[in-house]
View: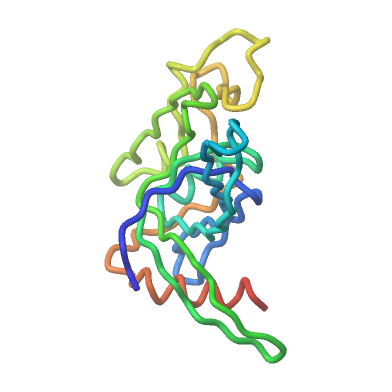
Length: 186
């Protein structure tokens, strides 16, 4: 099954970043989505059942998600829904996953600050992993969640915690996700 889906929910786990042997960056986390409805019998709002989704992002989206998303934050995830059967030596089951095309904070619940990623300059190592913080607030008291405060004197932040990945055009994302999902279950 491979259908497009948009889910709003709460991030249930801190993002986990993984780099494959081929240099493909993958970030994964779980999202809990609970439907709210008005219970006419009680005259009040109530929570429905909670659906849990595994979310996987690739390449630049994976890098940005690992820097931006934290457990407990409300997000909107758009991507391809995948249902997968899995089996280990002791148990088996079915997982519902979203291969993300877009991830963002749900602005109905928070304020977010935009920091643009600078494209690498051809032929040089400069520009890799730099975030343009020109739109980030310079107020030192604005260190609440969601506010970018990693800007240095030059207005950029170094993504030293991330490994640079080579160009990985033409990778088969489905097989990469299958290998990653198997490693996560073990």
